[in-house]
Length: 128
Picture 1: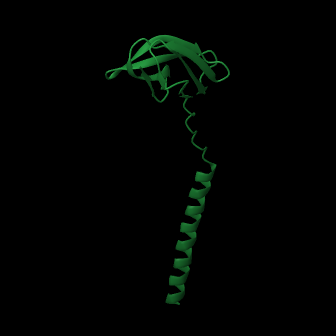
Picture 2: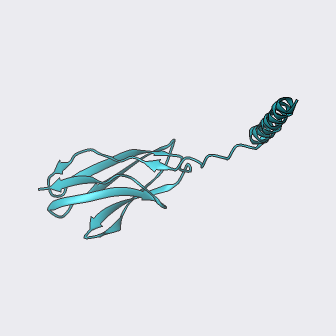
Picture 3: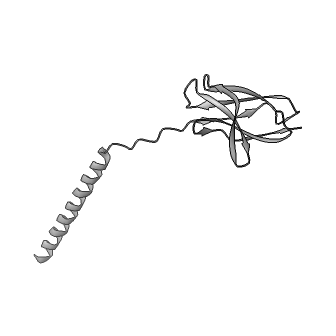
């Protein structure tokens, strides 16, 4: 008989633990899933020519994913460690943009396009 009480206690303990696990699992399954963060806006940048002559006009185009229609993208040039906005700007239309700029100084210019906190990867243009 003492062996039988031990077996019954063991079965009771396993049953209580199993019920607790099932209850916990059921609660976790019912909990609302966490919302995934909204995808970030992105801007791409393509340049019509990476090597140009002094005074040439260069066309910049790209896609603007998840930016509002009509958003203004601005061309920026790297000046030392900081980015400086140029007068060249365009509005996003059908998730795309197109703008031009004329280069009036020889050298290598590093440029990007920006809208708010969203920036493109930089591109280099060599002006001869």
